[in-house]
Image (cartoon, rainbow, N blue to C red; front, top):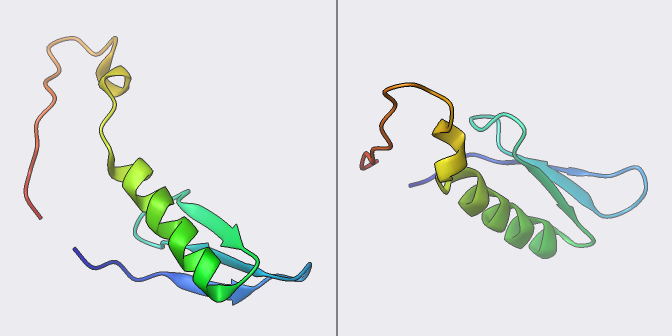
Length: 67
């Protein structure tokens, strides 16, 4: 899967990076490379399903789809 990311210099130094297709998926790093590596990890965590996500939802099922 390929996702577009936005990498921008931070006012305090380093870089901020986010994924427009994944609201709230944001990270940062001191270098471009570190910021990109950090957003890869953030994307993995963002997309990893958590059983707690469906707790309290009656008749909910946890399914997987291939992208």
